[in-house]
Image (cartoon, rainbow, N blue to C red; front, side, top):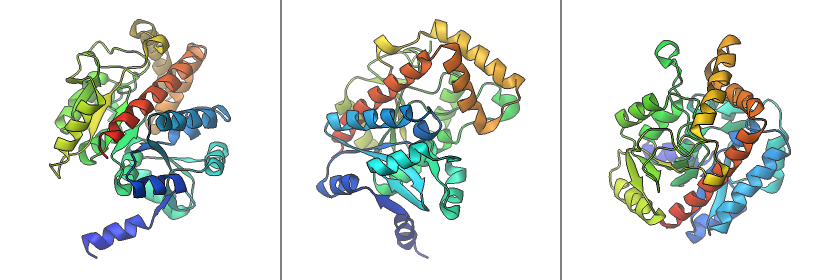
Length: 310
């Protein structure tokens, strides 16, 4: 089978929503969105309400949202209101990274896409910009557990711009930065010299690079696209000041949640959702409100970046 035939076979797995299909035909900016925040991030109906807020934020900036999920053996690029409701209320949805994507497709299971799988699907669909909350990375203690997110490999290989609030703060951020550097991924802080840390505007680490406008980011992406073997770009967009939980406060919550996970022998892909749930309880719900605020903030920036690329 030729490379073009391979691409044609993969393209048959894609199902575009009417809105996304029209946008692509008309040359409008489109922003990819993951779906694990819907199925694994919060309960119904808060999950679908948040998903709709994020989609509305993208539309408010003149772009079109494309929430990506695995349903009925297909990769859906953009969900209708009915499909979004169906996914938000589904049970036993697979959390799909690169290793899980084909399993969900071949078995017909519902699958929610992580950063890695969303990047794969977005690239296959021709989308260049993706908004999320925070990326996965190197977990604390990875020198013993080897627990490193597939998100980092995907950023190294797949040419999609990922707009996040940095790596999730429960991770080993210095090691995560080292791996990203090794994989050739530019890490760009938006409007700040400090690297953001998800719930907090600063991780205490200097950002490798800084850009201050969507136009500057668009110029970087256009230049990088001239090199066919270059992978993704990570934009680290700090949570709005009014919504942040300061690093000095968050560090105690994170340490307590990680200790609880270790005591209960939580491992692998179960660690992040478990720790996020524990932090939600420890912060009495504040962490979720901050998470929603930063995802919406990232979506708006992603839409402005996507507009620079059409």
